[in-house]
Amino acid sequence: MRQPLKIAAFAAAFLCAGATFGDAAPATSVDPIVTGTAHDALFGIAFDGANGVAVGAAGVIQQTADGGKTWKAAASPTELSLLAVSLRGSHRIAVGQTGLALLSDTGDKWDKIDTGTKERLLGVSVNASGVAVAVGSFGTVLKSDDAGKTWKSIAPASWDPFIDKNNQGAQPHLYDVKVEDNGTITIVGEFAMVLRTTDNGATWKQLHQGEASLFALDLRADGTGYAVGQSGTILKTADHGDTWQTVDSGSQAILLGVKSSADGKVFVTGMHDMVRSADGGKTWQHVDNPDVAGSWYEGASAPEGTSDAIAVGHAGRIVRLSIGG
Image 1 (cartoon, rainbow, N blue to C red):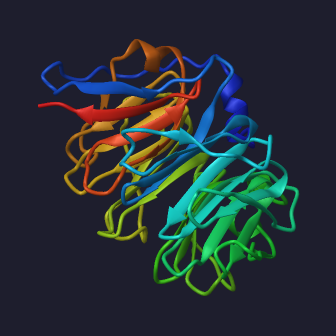
Image 2: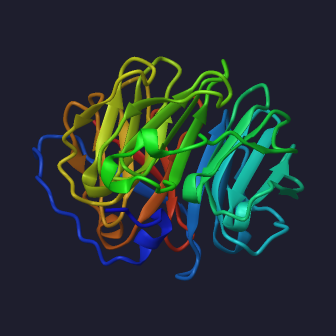
């Protein structure tokens, strides 16, 4: 059975269920930095060094230059929702509804770019060389070699080799992507799909398949990574994404974002739940916080040099997550 688009999950009255872990674990703090109105929503966040960008509904763009301590709204050329953002050096790319892409060199001015598609773009990644990939609904995979100025499709000619027999003919929704500095591209999406190409999309290798949609991907340069999605699904890799193992998150929530650090701290955001690990994913604890239990957070990222994470979500909120002890 096909799963719904990620943003449709925001309307679901979904209560988490799962094990409660030991009380001896150090507490996790959820400290608000920015709060908007009840009608605001932020979906994506990304950092490069101390510079960060958060994007959301009605074309909202929030920016920071001090590691997330303070944020300032930027002028946006659109009122369409922006669903994901990536930045690396002078390259800043935001994507969203109807194939929308925005580019900026410094964040002072954002310009609309024609991507050649009207499909909803749900994830984007850009590397240090300006190679960018955006993914989205119905099997959309777009690549840019010039930091987002021009785009072309690199989607597989057929998705059938990568999905089970019950879903043959489907064009899977794709939710997140990582472009490494060596040009390797990894994407995640429906059917617990993890795909990789090392030749600019000429060939694709399937690294994982299952049932739950995967909504977010975090791949670190040291080879450790996580993918998260429906029904509390968390996958982990320790070999640069070549192989993936399912870990027990203790949650049944829709998990929407993930950020990890080299010291073993992992934060996973979601609908009415948030889980974290202090030991590289060996054990997990729910984040005990009324705001988390009653609402949702999606994107998660972190400024350079910190093992905290910064998450965005409902009511235009930007919060800092940290593990005490």
